[in-house]
Image (cartoon, rainbow, N blue to C red; front, top):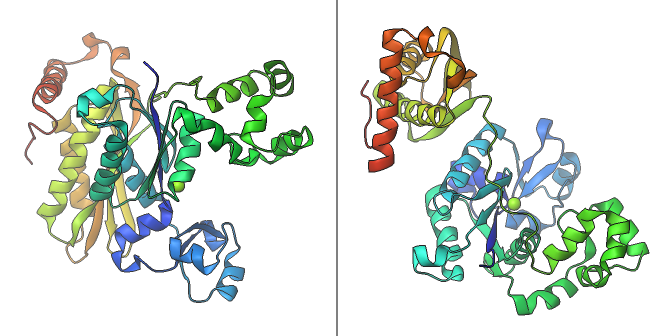
Length: 383
Ligand SMILES: [Mg+2]
């Protein structure tokens, strides 16, 4: 079976995140600025139309386009929304490779039977559902290789959000693609290629293998095959073992209600602990985070003498910290839980576990088994 790969790319991602937080910004010319408000790193469609260029220094943009709204970035919030988008993508296929904060490849090969839909209907569905659940608009390119899927997603920005690279249209697409538009061709390489008379992607694939190999090595050969629609690099979902796990999310509505906050935190504890167990890790550092309505972050953490992945124990620590952190008069917008200082479960010998420890490990495994069978969140520990 031929591989079918989609590249999902979030549109104007940082600006889109700001619009999720503040819907009143939708439809306005908005730019997000880099650290210390240096330059423009994300633009809404309206800001692009106004003429603001990517990377433009803030002082220049402000002078030239005073009608545009300029915002300082909230990197932590973009990370949270990105994680939400990626988690949603993993519900369509286990083969999701996160390429950057706002882009991921998904291997959709064979999913037509699963969904009883053709590929076009599947990526339309993904696009609609991601938008409905996260508020983020994505562009999706679909092709038989990553490189073509990436080209497709660029085209999709001008074709209503999806673009399928059909075999019989590859030649036309390559002729339309300037050499620097190809994924992986940087400024330096562009110069070399143009000197050799390679101006577009079609010129590139016409070059004999031997020449590409001598110019660019095996990378060049692979690129040629990828451009011709042959997959040389599979979607690689392998996640490395995490160094820490953080689960945070915005509350549905701002709140100062202790129970509302604790319920949200409990959800984070649960998903963080399942992840911890899935990786076979134990945590010795446990933390809780509250973000106020005005984006002030307060957090507390505690180091345990004995690492654990047992939910009730982690919950106990988190709620003790929460009681210290929580201030009754303050309105909060989001909550989070942090687990860190990991060690592998396997490295901790069973003999070292006390009787309780062993029972806790078994209980935790039971929870995971029940969830595998009955779905996520089938059981919840109370608080
Ligand atoms: Mg993007």
